[in-house]
Image 1: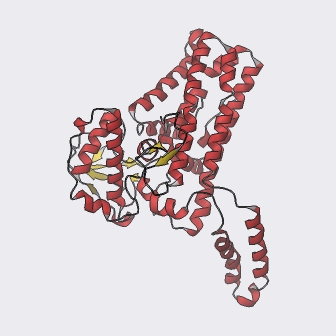
Image 2: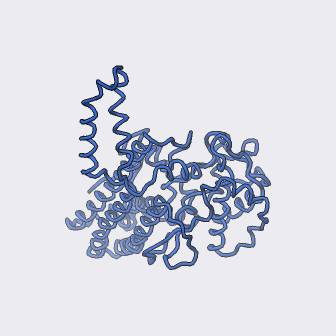
Image 3: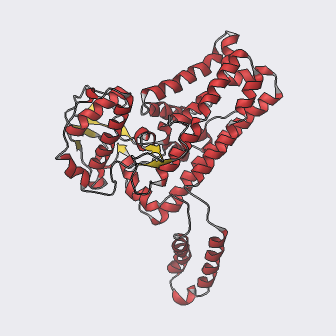
Length: 418
């Protein structure tokens, strides 16, 4: 997790995503190294970040149509070795893009360039979530001790935290201002009056207004998320090895076919490995909240979320799984174990105040999740009109993509109140 004491951050982008020739040329001079020399967790995570960025840059720097199908051994072998040490996957993920890529503002390990808002705002949310961890531990301890007062005090602190996370997320995509909207509508009305004089074709008349709206709204303030930066420059590098020329996967040169992480789709066929790309679901934050509050998802989403845990580093994954195991102790006959489950503890307490505090948490979490899905949909709709998306590229936030295929409820989970 990101250290909760870090209040401000800046981002160091290790590799310049928009420099198309840099990675390929640099590999000619890149010395190999033995990942076994990396002893500390910090060294291993730093190495994974550097290697994962290099791998993504090398594969996609000439675009989807000319994606490299073989990752050179100088990157592939140490990337696989350090991934196995960390318990994560050998490609760019949330742990590299956000968690290992943020430093305190006073850190010397920063660049002069402006950090991509998509990454920085995600890091802000991670930092805010860090304050939930001591609250979760206090609640679990209070449940064992039967201390209703402590449980309620802690639960009351979650809704403001969810609101802060939501506001940080909303900075990426703000609503169109009223002034812009009014100005646009007036311009549309003025131009509409002369449409019949300009265009004598019914088809041209029908197309005029939509095209005019797109043109006028294209310069509106849509928040911090730059569509060119995200959808064209950045997004393709986060998409993994599962589409386009890499539908059958990427070859990790110098890595034995039987050396697997266990998350290769269809194993290792003809030396090729298929891995999904980066996703917000790879963060332990939301999955920790799901485990703590007993949120249940449909089979498809649940399967996807469990798969995404494999992209976390081992301690993060183990924390979520341990918390989840404690949460499912309600299934046992032992009433002491059952009381350890938060929802069961609140229900059995008979406290109206505690029930209200729990339900307020569920309502706030549900709103955050629904707003998240809606923001992704809005960005797809607004930015997709005037900017060509990376062909065949999977959505970075796959949890929102699942909501398109199913519905909002399945994407947000079954957040039941008491």
